[in-house]
Amino acid sequence: MAEVIINNFSTTLASGYTSGSGTASLTSASGLPSASSTYTLGIFPAADATADPIALLRVSNRSGTTVTVTAEGTDTSAPSGSIVVAVESALAIATYVSEHAGSTSPGGSSGQIQYNNSSAFGGFTASGDATINTGTGAVTLATSGASAATYGDSTHVAQIAIDAKGRITSASNVAISGGGGGGLVLLEQHTASGAGSIDFTTAISGSYDDYVFRSTNLTFSTDNVALELIVGTGAGPSWDSGAHYTWEFYASNQANGSAAPGASGDTSVHIVENASNSSNTGTVRFTLDLADPASTATYKAMSFSGVVFQNSGNYSQTHGGAHYTQTTAITGIRFAPASGNISGTIRCYGFAKS
Image 1 (cartoon, rainbow, N blue to C red):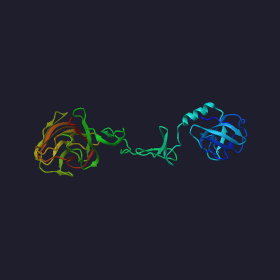
Image 2: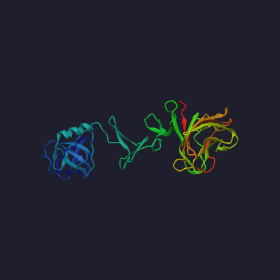
Image 3: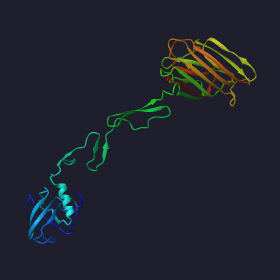
């Protein structure tokens, strides 16, 4: 309501005023208008004349400390001990009366939120999607079901569910499987340092039909060595070193030398041969394409190309192909030198189906 302007003088209601009109006793008449004046008194809670009035009373006559009063609005009672002051502002009186006309005392119980419904007061306890601390007024929102986190990264997008109230109720990361028609998606990568092999055991799944493996500057601990590949099958997987591989490649070098090694019924696929173990020049880089490894109806085909610094001092490039001559589904790929250890990085990408 509008601020009620009050005098600087006050007195106390000795006997409570309890009806729409009647008389009330004051402990003092000091500072009040003359006995014949008609004026308005504000009744305030004891010891707090700055709060909203308990009631506004129209005084028509006064005899000493006894006043004849008529209630303004419907606030028609005030307890003994309330502070009585004269109200100076006619506008403040009119505002108070208009705002309180037809009202009743606020309803509800301690700790509830009060409301006015067509001049009927009541109270309710906050519930549902929020709670209110009645001591501080702080509002606490109910949890929606989504975990507080950051979703989405370079290979995932955030998948969210939204309820009818616009709240996010769940969120998760979903791998980006599209690429605008056959885009490459990084699935698995490994960096080795003096390891016996580099194994891929999680990349191959039903999500892709075609996989690409790419190396970055592989080096070997043994000189004049071949880089070989075998496949894994089943859970684990189990590595197949049986005579189930047929391969061939063509190699040429800057000295006009060439070779076309190959084998049928071999125990591995050779990607390059005669690699040097020189620390600064003896590096191997290759790209290998593996088609439909999850098929159980056909042999598994792969094609590859690479470059290698050979122990002869020549730089050689290779282009070749191979088959895993089993219909068993492939679940893993292992790259390893024919002897010694391997260092460097190999990554596996999947071609999105759409």
